[in-house]
Every structure is written in structure tokens, then in C-alpha cells.
Image 1: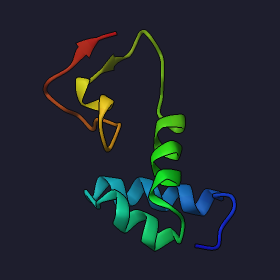
Image 2: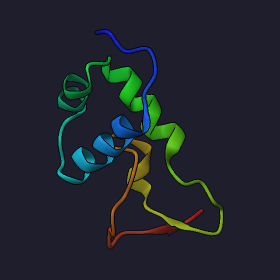
Image 3: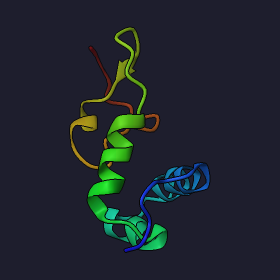
Amino acid sequence: MKKVRLNIEDRILIEELLRQNYKLKDIARAIEVQPSTISREIKNRRISNNSLLICDKTNKYPFICYNCSKKVLL
């Protein structure tokens, strides 16, 4: 794996692949970084606001929730 930092194009690609339900390993392979880099990027860039409704699925991969019907208040 060759990259040191992720650029905006990488972050956009991560978002698109997550929406298409790609696995963590597949996303890492596409961007040529370690899966842990992708995992940290997702965790660090997700929205964290106490007033938002957030699904309890955000505690495990993919660490985000897209329009889930099961939501809880923080």
C-alpha cells in the first residue's frame, strides 16, 4: 500500500462505495490503503451532533446509518 494521506477524491469514493454496500476490504483495495485507515476515516468524519437522531448501528461497520427506520436519540 502506497498512500500516506487521503485526499478529497478518496473521501468521495469512500462515501460512494459505502452507499453501494462495499466491504471495508474492497474499499481499502480500491483506494490502495489499509482497511484500518478506511475505518478510522469513516469514524472521524461522521457527523456527531447530540441533537441529531442517530441509529444504534453506528457502533459497528460501516459506522454510519442511511435512513434507517430504527433510530434512537443520543
